[in-house]
Length: 325
Length: 261
Image 1 (spheres, each protein chain N blue to C red):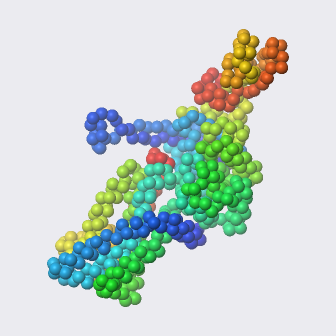
Image 2 (image 1 turned 135 degrees about the vertical axis):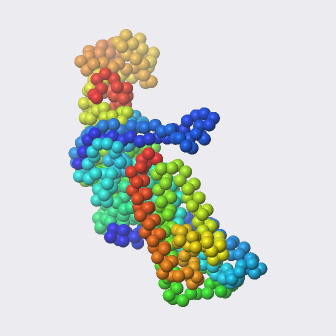
Image 3 (image 1 turned 45 degrees about the vertical axis):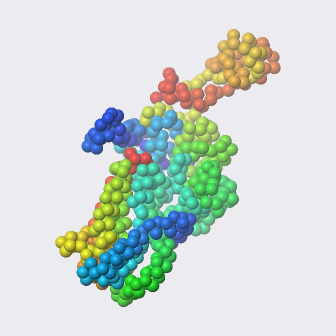
């Protein structure tokens, strides 16, 4: 389905030097710096998989996604998606994929979304009956009916993103590349988009490769993670494995008034939090700690949780000991 | 085949887009009505007898034809393309299984009815002022003119694709386009009929692509040029520039990405 071997992408960025005559000098000699956006990445994704592509800003996530979608030509390495070389941008390939970019839009700004849909039906050469059925389905799933007649410029960000998704999925792509599809959306809208993406994956068996800074997206959508940092792949595996490897401890949280908790829990190693106190302990010590807490504070509001994904990723990107390379 | 099947929808949606921009459209159209100003200037010169062999009526016919050709072949692709490349707005267009230039072509052609709507009253007013300005040509001339007009559009389109592609390499690609536009104004027959230029300059200008985009159909409409020779030169420019545009596009695609894909 998706095969990536030794994929690299570097490009030259012009530098604007400082100094009194730098601008004049740059007329005949322009300095440039080579940026290695992606370096020697390899992975495979099977049909129907949902994979999260994670990394800090500038890590190379979007560059990789664009190479997979055929927008960028790799500097080195080999990519095959659905048996095609993406950079050939063969119409038969483009008819089977989609790339949704949260920060770029394909909707025609001054026209209602239905005009972009009509344009896509024509450009993808979709049979009318199939296009009508798919659109009806998308309109229902995304609750687009009230939006279809309004110019895109009059839609809210969330409404526009839902219409973007519909436009990107009208041709029933087999592979969905999603680059921050929930960026800028409110919590409710993010949840709707996540539910929708899961539904598309379940109903049509579409493969999903997603980048996001919203950990909730990752936690809800992608059982498998690809961690990329500095252009290199740092981890490829299930989320649980990453958590076990980087954050094997559990977080024991006790909620309550600071004044009441502090003298009792501080000696047990708890630290303050906004709504209570917390201790990070190895799994083997959890029962012992719980016993100690409840013995001192019977009826305390105690919870035991995994380390949040945000913290796991912070550790991964800091390159902490135990981080899988 | 895919393009042919899609074409009616592309035109319909592009027409809807032009309709949404109707106020701007009228302003843009009036902005390309410089031939009316040139007509007023050259008319005064012709009336004073300063233009040997060019009567006031011929001046009116010439610049009326320039106005028509300019309106029907107006293209703004270079600006759109430059913007799309620099901002990355080209990316969503590249993801569709149809070349983005087909949509841009539909947008350009969808503006033609608007231009006709503005042209008709202008031609009516010109006809009332100088009836010979709008004297209808014979059928054969109309046929040659239509063919020449199509080639002028194609040559102008390919030129703008070439200049638009410069955005793949340069941040200020439109500067080069402005230089071209300046030369075009002088050598296409837009500001000065080639017939009024010194013979040596006129002979050179008639072979250049500037003339192929405007002066050629104008002179053919007025019966001032050899039809087959003029059409052949236009056709040759169309082929050469289409090849250059195609090569520039392919090279630009390999380059795309360092500039905001």
